Image (cartoon, rainbow, N blue to C red; front, side, top):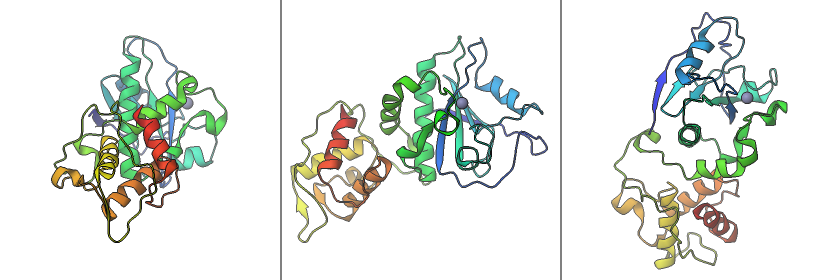
Length: 262
Ligand SMILES: [Zn+2]
């Protein structure tokens, strides 16, 4: 987990529009500033200066995250005026300072996005590049690897603080490379409940991606039984991955799980 420092733009400052927002999207940017020292703290200072007429929610560098705006207020970062990008999305800038480790900053951003998705119920499909809103070539260092960037979000480790109520979980570590023998048929909650090793493999795969059948319960609810809690984990996985969220495990869900496990 990465430290998040809240350093809000003062309300008196014109950079803080103060419009109510219910975030539906997460918009990713690169700072396009390769100067030494152009890290998250320096952008926190930049965005607090009056008259810059730009603002966003988070700046992420290789060590820390600064939050500049509360999540229920909009910022000016998407270049689409009062469009969906500015009015309905959380803006995240990833630093490119030459004295920082860009890949680590990317990893930190993936962690943050995963956490925000969970907390704000934003599906992975709604994590978008700045380019989506205005056509700007931003995030300039991630556009040509956008799919792998998003795959990294899906498998990011969120840590204990990712959920509203922290629970003792035992995440399966470094299992993303493991091959799970996933069921080949269709699974849904039936009477009697479907049981077996293949259901267990499915549960383990879901848990490796942080969709626990029953987080905090014994073995996180991995019990080899396709009951309502496992169906719910499947549903959450489907929702976050742009699939029909019906809690029924089938070929599309299997394919997506396998793709993320590669
Ligand atoms: Zn941008």
